[in-house]
Length: 67
Image (cartoon, rainbow, N blue to C red; front, top):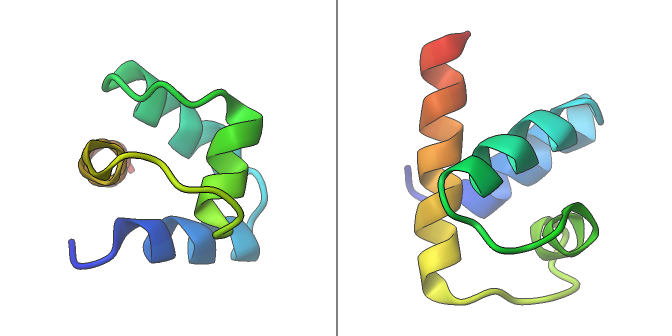
């Protein structure tokens, strides 16, 4: 996935319910941001370490396999 942050932002923009699903998968894969910080990160209001982007990509992959 080229830009998981942008992909997640677009998903949440189209359906805000995705935020909970994406964040839960991100957290389950080892992400450390709480939901508020995660939302800020998706919208470019805060930054996370580079590994968080990889964790976000894993979370989106997990969701893709479940849908």
